Image 1 (cartoon, rainbow, N blue to C red):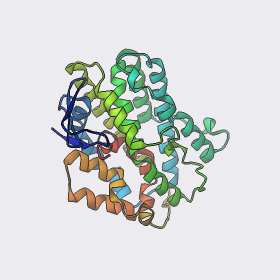
Image 2: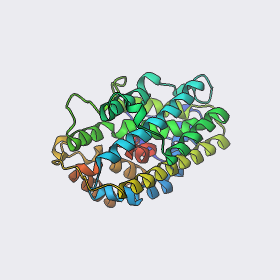
Image 3: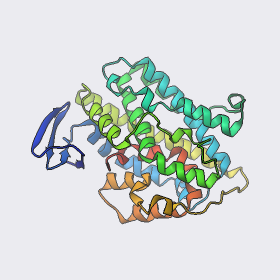
Length: 317
């Protein structure tokens, strides 16, 4: 059984919470292992670690990045979010998803469209196309939206919570490495203007998710779907890695931004995800420090790292 800090937990207080009981003891909320958030964290640990150890991600940690791949990463995100938000709209009143419907706060499609216009120009829609790996991801999202709407929870949770957890740090890294305007052009994806406190919103989202009326079988299916989401992301990593082999080296150069984050390593979503999944590891500290010292290696990571961090990073409130 895991514990997580909350801002407003009361001593000795306990409340019913969907699949289990949440005990609030001395400012710490202890979640039942049958809560969906706990099941997701435990069930995706292995695939999470596999994703972190793909060659594509290892290259990031060595500080190698190509601007063209960053743009292609944004294209993949655009098609992914377009599919997901189309299905969310279709199922916004479905009882097994409706409590997680936060279009103003979370939806990313329009923000990504603005970023793509910045990178490609006004005719950006004529210049982009969906890649085979992204198409498989998109097809699966549409399938569950039509046939099993409860499984949309896995995709929404994986993407949105990861983006929200690491977005501000990654925004700074991408802005510095790509020398983007300080006014935010090209970085709209990382801006959640409808959310004033990421910490409070993540707590709300987790609570809503745990309160969904789901039996054990459906919860297990959601965990399986989250594992599949990681696999889709790894396929996209592999695809981008292959594209990278055809490009000339155009590694971006940027000064370190560690100082701008006041040395707070816990802000790095890589660190947060691994620490939350494993309970603490000197290995990820070293990995995360490497990333922070090589911000150019985070530029494309900024486009897709949220998928790796999503299921665990928001536990560190």
